[in-house]
Length: 471
Image 1 (tube, rainbow, N blue to C red):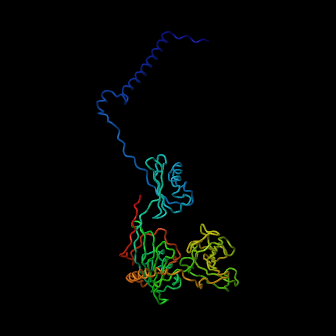
Image 2 (image 1 turned 180 degrees about the horizontal axis):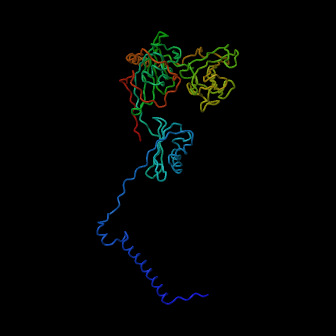
Image 3 (image 1 turned 180 degrees about the vertical axis):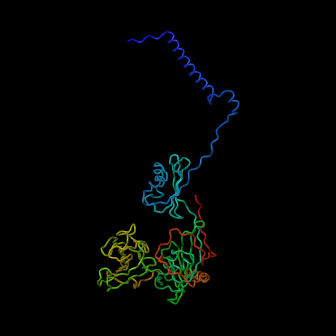
């Protein structure tokens, strides 16, 4: 069935409705355009007031300075990325430090400071420091290129006078005077030929020292030369004095006694710092593990795992490897047919291998308990012309004395220093003092703060090294 066609009146009505709708939409759009923010009506323009000449923007904050301590658990590049440094800036940094600093030798615990542009991770500045004197910096020049340099740190040297009386140990007396174990090591080294600081010290012993101390600003760095020292020994019933004499670049410069005799031995008295002898050289000792009589061809020093072990004298490494019951052992050939053995090491020092030349007191390994061992200790043995000997009883010659042509200058210099030593105040020991701490075998701190005043005073003839300015 077909639909009926629309009536003409219906068609006209529908057309009128459509036209009205179109008109209303157009009208609305026209009004919207007339009153938009960019074309407000006259009344709004009159109320708005004058338009500002320009928009003022506040200052942009500089990139923040971030401090970071280097670790060895991640590559340096990953640590820099964790600080927000972009990969491109890391490549720039490595290129900038080429010939200045080898990033493969970055040390754990080193301090990093970075300034990074947060928008794109561009590195603006990097500082690297392993201590007061080892400081590096990378900055951008006027062209935006990253450049690196080692900073020249100003150093001043002051001569200090320190004196103290022993109650328990030299180490504790030095601590009481406000000084560190580094100065103890210098004193032990200076008197190495005459005094065994493991056996000889007694309560009431006294020492006086005149020593250089190095500072950057007000921060103590380390000790320089021990210019003069005096030790009053109750066991020996005498006073020992040593003096540093000779230009620093002279091969014969060393510590000498008042007669001009060298006080340094070709062989150190102990292969590590302030250790306790736990077992002596004994050809008929019963082995603590094997339980039968077996020659103990050496001396055992009880010490903490990781305590540095020194080369007893200049020499050449014969072997540095694992050797059954000895565990990790370093063997060094010295002059005069002597050979030393350092056994049960936790590890061998970096760079120590067969054929390497070493200097006296160079670190060759670290105390451990490898091989047949009941606990952390160093087994130290010495052979002379192929036969085991008790190194504690070795009679070794002194190093050469003051050259004959320098004796007049030596006597003049030491006369003045003896007078100066006699005026150094000695801090008396307290009536009671705690037991000597086990830390007698600890290393001196890497960065020592300025020592307390204690019994020290700066000498009136303090030497100041003219410092170059920081760039």
